[in-house]
Structure formats: C-alpha cells, structure tokens
Amino acid sequence: MTSTQTSGQSLAQLRNPLVEQRADPWVWKHTDGYYYFTGSVPEYDRIELRRAATISGLSDAAGAVVWVQHDSGPMSKHIWAPELHFIDDKWYIYFAAAREDAPFRHRMYVLENESANPLEGSWTEKGQIITDWDSFSLDATTFRHNDEQYLVWAQQDPAIQGNTNLYIAAMSSPWTLKSKQVLITKPELDWEVIGFMVNEGAAVLKRDGKIFMTYSASATNHHYAMGLLTASESSDLLDPASWMKSQSPVFASCPETSQYGPGHNSFTVSEDGEQDILIYHARSYKEIVGDPLFDPNRHARAKVFTWNSDGTPDFGKPPADTE
Image (cartoon, rainbow, N blue to C red; front, side):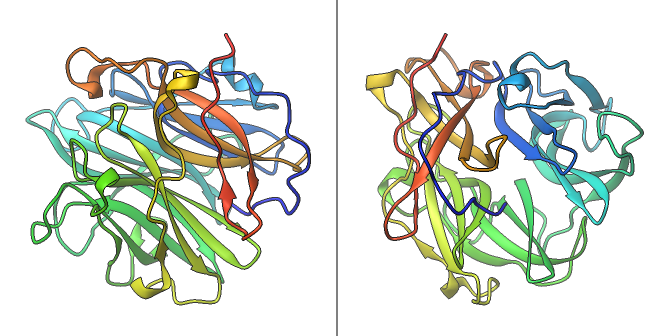
C-alpha cells in the first residue's frame, strides 16, 4: 500500500485485540469505503472474510466462510495466512495449504472472485503458484510497482541452512510467475534464528520514493519479531542488491505492556486517510503450553505508527490490551 504523507497527531488508541484468535491478520481498505479482513483461523481449516466501514467495526463484523479445505490431497490441511488483494478489477486470495497425509507440506495457492463484494459470489481455484523449485512455501503477498506486478513469499531452499527465506519475482498473471525468483533476505541475524531460522510474512509499504518491506522472524512464540527491508522506488526490485536490511528488529515483544511475539503484519490507513495503521498479531502472555502453532490466542491487533526523520517507519512498541 501507499502510505499517507503526513503523520499528524496520534489517534486515540485503537481497540485491542481487534479480532480475537486471528493470526496473520490482513486488512485491505477498498475503494468502496470498506475495510476487508482475513487471517488464519485457529482450526486452520477454512478461509473467512469480514468487512466493516471502520477499523474498529471489524471486531464485531460477521464473518463469511468463502472457502473450505478439501477432504484429501492438495489444500486439505493447515490452511495458513490468507491475504485478500484486488487486481485488475477482480479479487484474489493468496494462501498456503498442506495435505491431510503430509500436514506440513505447504504450497501456495490462489482463489479468484469477480464479484464487487468478495464476501459474495463464487471463488474459483486458480491452482498452485509454481516456483523455481518445489519445496515448503507460504505467506505469498503481492504488490504493483511501475506497472509491474510482483510476488513476495517465504520458501525453503534445500541448499541454504534454515527454514524459510524471502523471495521476489515478477508476475504474468495473479497466479503465475514470469521471472526467476530472487532471494532478498535469509535468516542470519541473531534475532532471526531463535527456535527456527525463519524469514516470513512479508508486507509492502511505499512512501516518499522508498519501498519498505516488513517481515517476521524466529519461532512463533515471544521471540517472534519484525524486520525491515528498504529499496529505492527507482531501483531494480529483482536485484538483491537493491534491498537494504535493517540489522535490528523494528517491532518486538514488550513485557511492559504484556505483548509477546508481534508480527506477520499488514498495513492500512485510518478512515480519513490521515494516519498509517499497522495490523499485526500478538499474544498477551509469554508462557505457552505445547506447540505455539496450536495456541489459538495470537489475536489480531492494530496500532497507529509514525515516521522517523530519515523517512523510515517508526512502529514504536506494541500497546497493551484495551479490554
């Protein structure tokens, strides 16, 4: 998304949690005035959408189930991190899914809907996004720049130590890559390799001649945190050298406010378009029993953010729950 140009005065703190038990939250503010929301449901078995005229209205908006996992085969297990995009007058949902007989063999898939309202009409399965090699892949996001559509996603490379790296490629359609995939970041810093060696969950923000890309790293417990890549809008986005990686996390756990593992974010703006809003998930407690993946309380949250004097985003610290 394109950022607002003025940060203005901070809004009163937004309602938090915004949507309970929705990890990997995605918000799209559309030209019809509605905010559309999706995220991973705790059962990981379906994709739900909701919409509201205000950000706070998303909390109580009715959800619509728009797609359900298959009984077997591809797309039959662990439906993760759906994102809703509007490209060339059609709606698309990007998501990752595994198989009932291979529950962590995730690949990326795309759905299409021609309706004006994506909570209505029919969703057509456009198939798997085919990458340069076949391996664990997830968290696809897409953006347009200089009339070129790009895909960014997380994928495992058997030749690189670790779990997932971030890649970018140009697209010939909303579900087809046309360029070779290019590695733009891999988990290598101390804060990126705790529990798991992970770079995932990218989100793109444009402002003042720069393209910012946030991502999340480490295990999905209190070590989970957000990093930042920066490129010039005039650079070749398929050149790894165009992307500068910040060495420290830009958004991380905050014991003072009892917020742990913030990440897998998206961006939107306030109703009047004057404020930039960070949408992300986090837990309100540190200690987790069992696998963090199956602890359902990664709640979707929202926070106004501002800008540093050097033009980079200032996400601050995750605020405490408001209720």
